Image 1: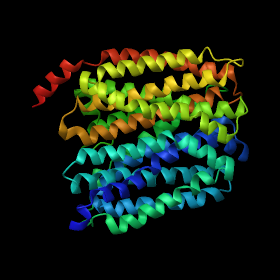
Image 2: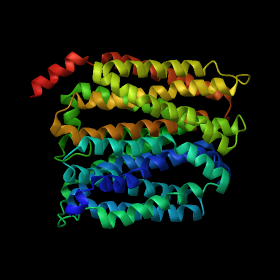
Image 3: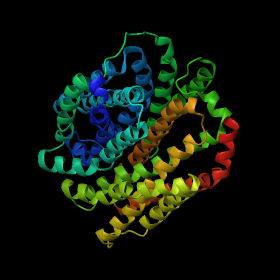
Image 4: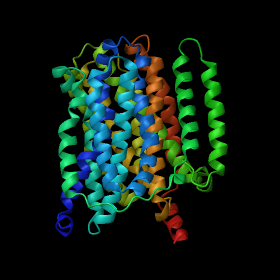
Length: 455
């Protein structure tokens, strides 16, 4: 154990190889959607479930797996997560139908959701010096894999068809599994306490989200009011139950006490709704409307992903000097500007102009991600950091789920410039909301005063 902890970078590398699997698999699918749509004879609305099911399973999986990590030990759960991902990736290429593939995507999400909370637990417990650097390194694993997932997926689908986006996981899984056995610190005794897991709350949360998705996807044709009723009833039941439960899946009481944090969650959810509309929408548009291959699409998507990564250090520097509000406003305005620029794109526009638009949208994401996370931490106490981070990820997943539903409605019949503009118009309205919420954030002085009061 002592030798292992003298090399903390090995611990970080082992965990990093595992934690990159969730963001990588959530993003690689964007370029494969068109191929899967033709393979299984799906409408785009049907194919959008490949996005929604992954994020829904992740939204439920991460907080639950964090609690299971405390019960069974982080090393055991980390290895179990790798096994689940391996099983999902092995079965997915042989899926006989679309339902089976959805099941594999859900299992893949649950398994990969196990890796982050258990990995974070081991880092916090075993790395005391330069822990911030270790956490930053894990963040790089996640952010880079998510950003470049479409490019990686594009090359894989172009060269070896859609099963390759599942099989490519195995080098990471095998290496992380072997290193986990050798490097990760042993866990203690199993301490079962299933009362900590809010199974009933999770059930109503899932039912309400599924009902909402089914209703949204039905808007284009005949509205499914039964789905709307299910969403409303399950949502209200979830709200009432969570307010009474001693260990709720989502702590609504805490959100009521800190409205600023609630606004941060709402803003981050809306940011991700808009951003993921482009993240998943552009690859489909490029392939089905513009005729680009998967490989070409992956390269073009670098404009969106690359600028998101490049701009992040600048955003971090601005946060150090001015607090989170100024860069958050910059990110919101860039998102609004990029969405407005997209409305100028037409069939006669050059690819270069589209890539300029994607670069602006990518820069907005670089500002928004780190600014929103900083704004959150500036408004919660240290004791609340863990639960606040979980809800922060849940808000990201909800935004991604809603983006899949929005694309499912707008791209269901036709994928062309007119329907891309429709997506942009809807997103423009959400961007105005994001800008308004950015100005609503308290300034740096307000944060300092809040921190002084907490102390």
